Image 1 (spheres, rainbow, N blue to C red):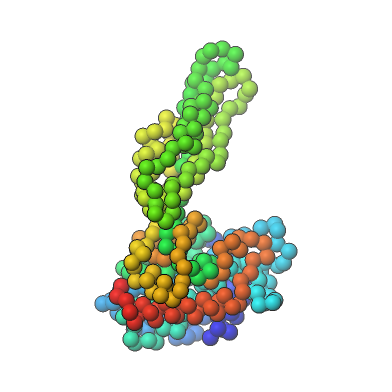
Image 2: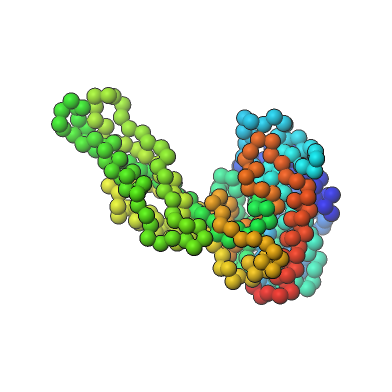
Length: 353
């Protein structure tokens, strides 16, 4: 099975699958599962399948990873779609993020597919648009498969358990002023209004801190104002990147901003919520029993769009994601499959969801 799984990953790498353009890789995954006589389903570029003895009377564990990729950066020295294996490394765009996790979860699902003695259901889902947090990925699929008791999200974590993950809000702000001649003491400079707000953003400390993720982090990343050197601008636009934590909901963060900023604020979206899992949750306990480590993740995944308990675990190394000449070690995939299987077995034997 491992050989077939590596072959599948190689084939997926060879097909460009940028976010919103994953049709071909979705078809490859669909055909792979369909050839095993499974009842595969597809919605847009999301593909999913339930275990053979799925029962509505059991809780469900979702095994999910994504098959879309970012575009290759200019630093590539290799063909990003040439999935060669050299020195135990499988090269290619999406090999590490998150192809290794995708096929490892798929292999794990196949291993348990015919098991009549599971105390829970399993659903494997290969989803689209993760890299852009698009609305036609896991967010589109989730209502079709809920309720879900636990989601295991496959991302490169070195098979450590990401027990918390930051959320994201991007806020566009407009500071209002009154236009005037720069030589006269008249008008209100919108830049100064913005500067006062930016200073507050820079110095404000949110009272509550997350146990795992630390403080909420706000950073002004874009600033635009003015058209002429001798005219006070009546508008100044700036953008805030906010990395949220489980200490606040995204909606609470926006309320605090509205109470303290003079500028008009317009959040682009509140969809990308932070997440965390209780350290006493059965999957965390099972992972610790197997010697897995825990950590808090600063990077986003499809967890941000789920509305169920979730944890992020997968083979590969996060620091290799989106880098030139991306690769994953074959052994990382093999070890990942083995550890996923042990985790599901331990959950089935010792813990109730």
